[in-house]
Length: 231
Image 1 (cartoon, rainbow, N blue to C red):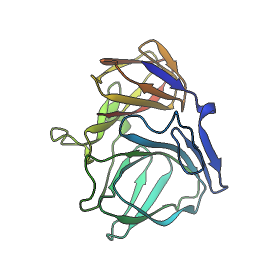
Image 2 (cartoon, rainbow, N blue to C red):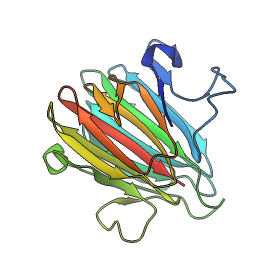
Image 3 (tube, rainbow, N blue to C red):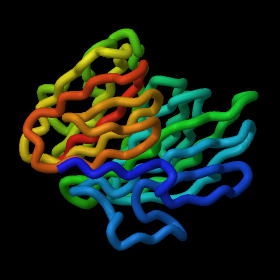
Image 4 (cartoon, one colour):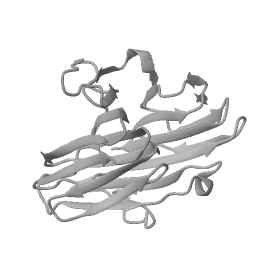
């Protein structure tokens, strides 16, 4: 099953400094048919105005992955962590038993990003934060794991869930495969248009995938893809 959720059908709100689109129910947007996808709870497509951002606020019991598409995001938290994550790179915050954080766009231009929340395997635990560059050239023509809850994904940022966040950059006409098995998949092209097992998915659309053993993704134009694979 591959269900395409078009960008135009997404919920969201424009707060001036933040223009947010929600693939799943979030804040004031509620759709009982879009409460999550397996353990994937949130996928927000955010555009943040220059010199603005999210002031300090709390989280607990959630794995929060930020994939920066353009610009950069600057992170601060109650553990004393500080960091700036640029376009194409990733940060992960395991909220654990509780953490406060702020995320600011301190750049001169807009920052666009995907914010992805995945339920952890279990509640509690010590909160943590980390960030890492993932050059787009290293994922040219193939899926590369950015964040993972599996021990054998040594180059990925750790998350506390039985899942992965992976990404690929494909030139028009290129195909990449990914073994999803019996898990839940949710794929969004950050840019470009692709065909997933024969189903067309346009830029910033979401594809909710289930009961598809092998994903075969062909770029109909140059594309940058992010996929969550979660049990």
